[in-house]
Image 1 (tube, rainbow, N blue to C red):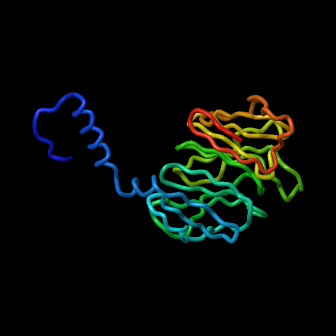
Image 2: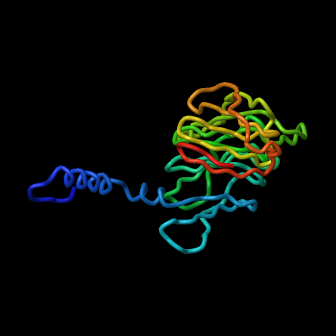
Image 3: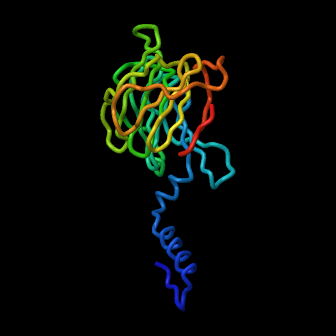
Length: 220
């Protein structure tokens, strides 16, 4: 803790308290907060550090092959699941570079699935299953901090596939599904998805939709 001397005003005390909190953040946590990882179709993991203007650089390799998987993350760990002809799940720690390690398996082999997460739990929803040559309504979940096979969460009301999008808060995940529909799931509980509402444009489908969200709202 820094050695601050003198008589402090109340506002100064708040300022110093905030500084102490920042001082107590570990170097690994600082690094993880400023880094993003993404997996490429060739099985490579790349990183970008936000505090640097450098181009992406190689982080390591995925152990599961295939394209069109999905990813979730906590503040310390990234997890990839699914892909063409694969139901494996990989994980890597943001603060340490190297190859990803096996985490477990999804319940169903599928690709073009979508994913959502909060700091505790990750969801892998829908996708196209090669075994049935069709989209599926399966929703799996994992606890990001502990490796293991994914567990059935419930079902989407409509099969989700072909890179559908999702938005997430710490409480709820929302998926765009066929037509102009949104479905919602409460992340901390299990059960089938329920209808959330409709998109403003009736002709928006679930195929290759992009989106973004924060804790309060989302766009897609």
